[in-house]
Length: 580
Image (tube, rainbow, N blue to C red; front, side):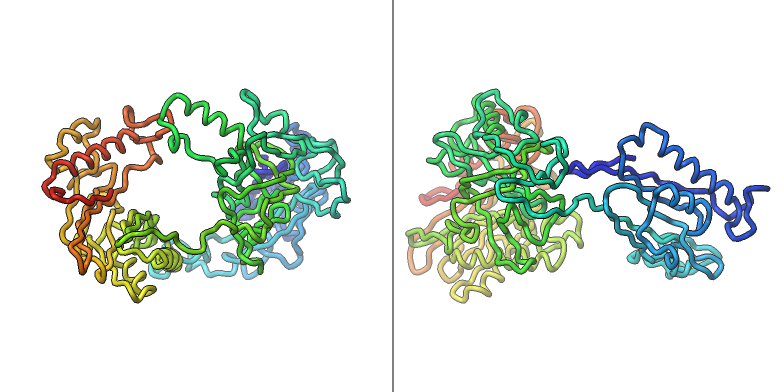
């Protein structure tokens, strides 16, 4: 099988084998009584056939990195292995001392990863099986005690040790001289080898591209990306910065400083198609020219991001960060990608946090209310319950809860409406306690602390309020069992909006609560909500293809039900300060 390493031009071919074993006789001429054992002739024939196949079949033409791997059932100085080695294959292992198998009180190598090609190689053997007693493996032969088996351990998963082979394709070269750049993309770009220095004038690519234009003509070239008149290049997405050292740069109107969602400024409509096409012509991905995942230091053309693991000062990359120059090799894998050779930000890379708020903004008022989604705050770990949605381990939960509680303590609000807390009476209470520990002037508790569940979803909406400043007067929830919204619910194709006991909903159940400001007669009512997301489809009539996205119909239904509830339920009578 031939494989190509993603995000590169590197290819290699691997042949996996299992030669005839020594366990049973093959007959006259095949069995060797001088050490190679039964069926040695069959193994020699297999090795010769393998080499002839590689040298003669068109499948292997132009394939210069070939690996022969597998259980060859031959020790290092036996004819099958020697034939493969004499045919140009090699191994970096010291076969004089290597072993992958134990038989009759002696060790030796039956398993190999032999290589021929231009890549450099490294190899090792994981001695996890051959040295281990077979009493640790899976079978229960001879009435073996089943309690001896340890499913949490890899030891003795087989009787052969696995062989590891590393292929390194990149060839380090000296830095390029001034006025030249390194060809890090492909042999075909400039007709010379990968890693060679070339002198070339970059092709100018101006974003956004004209209507009906594409990036195709620039693929494989050194390009310099520039903004069109009235636009600037800004960072618009960095979701893959930590994993692949990539981020997205787009042309945005100078007056905006960033790109906005279509329906942030316009109602859903046919112009969304034009907006989407313009976005494709406006954006490229910037890459670090490396296939490493989760690098310790993220270095894109000399700009270091994160990097704390590499001893660097931690740096951020904010959405909206402007760029004045972007030069690199242009290619297409999962979109339009520039592997940057030169990247300059308007602010210095050490100052990329310019514009990052150092403290929450201040708002005037007698009471401060904050609404915030806390992204699946679950005290139940996913390692404990697969239906949980938050942290996987105690360490992850500590990281999550520490950061969220610090942020809420800094906000220092009288009342928090929180979304995506675990739907138990302990999730939001745990968060409230952690915030209290950071802010001695506050004493937060939750409205839902006596409700085991609010709605049927795994997550809920809840309130954290400071009992030093606010008094909870009453609260109420809205689900599909409320007769006031029966008509709206029945109009839904699937018969649900918020759900009810025994029936899952789409949007989470709204929670309304009335508070009184202490030492005053002032009251206000707040309804905390979490409408259905756009992430998954809801079906015909609910999904909007003109900008509002999946499940728009469900969100419209939730909004109508909410307004009807406020206008019709006695709970809201005489309440003239209402917040949604």
